[in-house]
Image: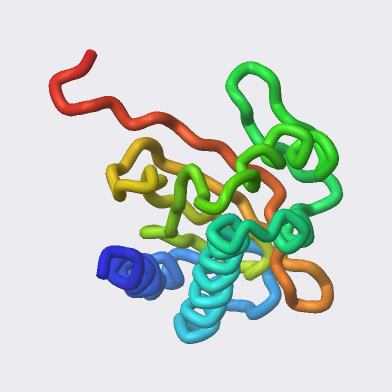
Length: 162
């Protein structure tokens, strides 16, 4: 499965990075044990899947609960700033019995602090054809939950298209 493979590759690369980082725990840039990064990668993967599941379940309120108060969704040339702006545009994606698209992470990276993470992966139409890739940035809240702070998608060009 690509998402697990990429998460494991990201976690496996940590020992090499850790040797270049300061050794003192708590020092900015210090790498925590690999198992701790793996745990955070799993948390962010799960929250990204929950976020996508809210779309599939047609649950706009559940989707909105994962948006940070200062969230920014890149929406072409007009960024959507704040949950109200995001839902004003994204609310239409919750109309109808079937979601117009779905997504899942195939790469999740977490900073050594464990406080910020990036997820990315394919976006598919209802027929399963990949139409875009998303990138999201997640922030860990004091209570341990994650909230999305940045989101952006980029269309995928068809093979041979310029």
